[in-house]
Image (tube, rainbow, N blue to C red; front, side, top):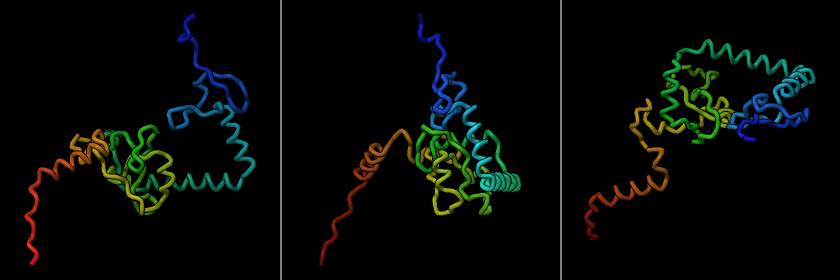
Length: 184
């Protein structure tokens, strides 16, 4: 028997049933959630009914955000966003991680008058996006592969910290040393 022919299965932590892997949502980190879609939806419904005021506030906040996003000036195409992702090497603009799902993050939040223009968007992992909230004091790193993903790297991502230090060291060695000053 060939083990590759068997479907991938996972055990739901809530209903304790073994189900196909497709019945589990992505966790945003390259894996799958520990509860199946059905149990996950039931948990959401239970939460909404157990805390109606919090649920009402959450829905109102989401609705306000959607309205702000639709009213915000500027816009961008999917091609511009893909170029922006390429400019950042498909890494988070804040922590530099590439092993997490990336979302569009507004550098200047819509709530602070920011726009949906591509110049105001950077890729960010969900945790960095949530940590930043609507703060203006946290700035993303500049794109390592140039502003348009052209390959003209300001600091090549493949170079790493040690490679960058070696390059800076070679530049310092190639520069003529200054003449010693006479003390007088």
